[in-house]
Image 1 (cartoon, one colour):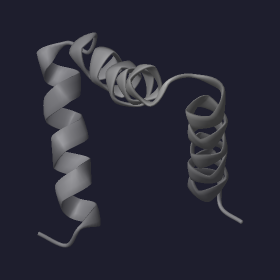
Image 2: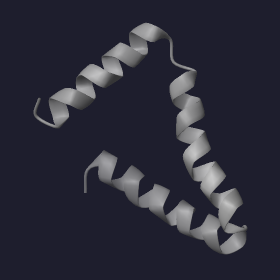
Image 3: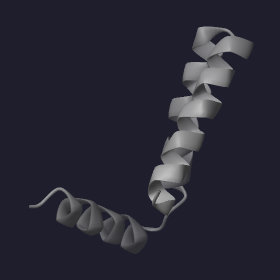
Image 4: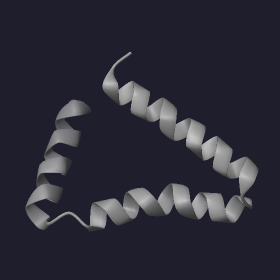
Length: 60
């Protein structure tokens, strides 16, 4: 299993645990808020690089 697949599986597992343990709205806030906050902490050049890499991966 690739490194990215392991990260994705771990993220899904954490999300399911949060949905069971917390109210659904709090779990949703954490699941959406953490990646959004991480993206907003990047400087503009890092955001451009991330978008460029993401476009290459989807075949644009």
